[in-house]
Length: 245
Image (tube, rainbow, N blue to C red):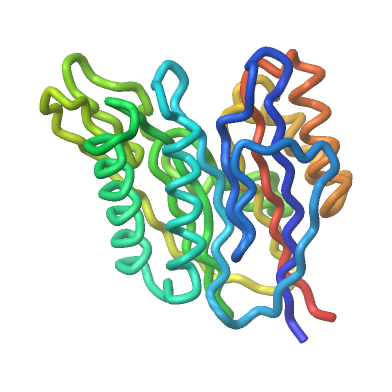
């Protein structure tokens, strides 16, 4: 049987008062939680499996609300996401949900980045909005398969490429989801993370830890590296591995 093992961890870091990152692994959605010990879940490869990390935008009120809304929406829609258009529509639906929350009783403006993958029997649909990232671990090193976007708001509007909500005085929300399809095979590994990992930890360190450790131990060592670098931001990461039993 071919299966997907996902090891995930989320932590506030050493500077932030609370964790505003959120994760989704299939039906599991840890939001604003602390999991210093990696949690590993195993799924049969078949039904679409969504694995993603969302980073509530710093300086925005309600950022933990925005990241939680996005991962919960992806958990609901994940099992029916089978192609690139479906993933894009799911991200647009995330955007509309956060927009509606900000227009209602939620904070006047809120935003989040999101990056992740939908794992299918023969392919992986990598997606992102903003600067959270997806990497493929290959023999040649880590290969970034997501496309960075600018997660900062524009003047006078909620101009965020990242599932944003509007300012109540009428800003227009804009976001630009990137979706990339790649083939998968047993042995493939992917790292999905927020910039709380990639900003403080150099690429060569990330690559070395991914090469040196597997699954939960790799997740733990990546987290330790971010903490050793000062832990300046919330850290959310997930490692997905495709394997045969």
